[in-house]
Image 1: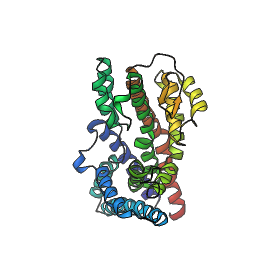
Image 2 (image 1 turned 120 degrees about the horizontal axis):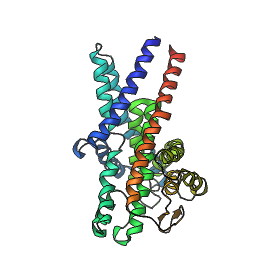
Image 3 (image 1 turned 135 degrees about the vertical axis):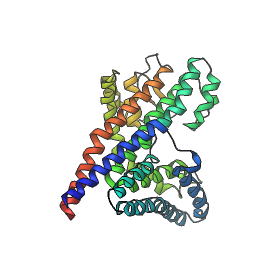
Image 4 (image 1 turned 120 degrees about the vertical axis):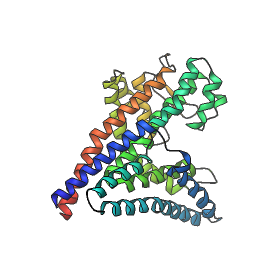
Length: 329
């Protein structure tokens, strides 16, 4: 039985590494086959059904909507991988790793952030501010026409910093705890929050549960990710001392209890001030923010993601399978 759990652990490591490489080599899946697009379409359909004049019923519908969508996507993934793992060996094990990696890859995005932010850096390098503004709607909701060059750079770097958690390390974390189905469940929660997790009149009832879930599920990953950013800054030759200092000073300055951690760590590492107008200012304005900071932020994001895999995912997988062996072995 011990050999069985060792085999599962090794398979999980292979799935993680293969999915990581798939992202770096292939980038994002096409929209027509991307599960996140399907999640979004189901959210659009169910949120219309969830609306109700009674706020209490609308809140209950919001809870049911979130749970339903998580089950719709996570449960089939669990069943599919369970059935594949039970096929005759070694073919079943090989297929399990391949299918698991392909599915897991859909829950996180490393290289795609560069696909949207590098053109911004290139446009600004060429003094084409209008060209840079055209790419902003892909990563932030701010009105690009109202932003100057400094604010465009800030928006891009902030997005990279925050996406390091909700786009990469949080799916990694739940993969380590609950496998590929857990990563899918997280992706549903995060997509729900991005679509209905607002406090406006339309979504404050339907989306309250999704917003709370997103805050809860990002709580631990955001904090681990921020401190790993400090280490990543050290390894990449950025200002890790400033990253540590600004993280401690500014991490609570955002309305989100999680976003401030990685944004402040990134601001300190790059020695710049990141600002969302009328909301927050993180880091110190030293007067040298430039388009190059976008590419530096991407390098920090990649190094942080790698460190998270080595320092968090692999040990956590080992611990999980050790616990399973002690409980059921």
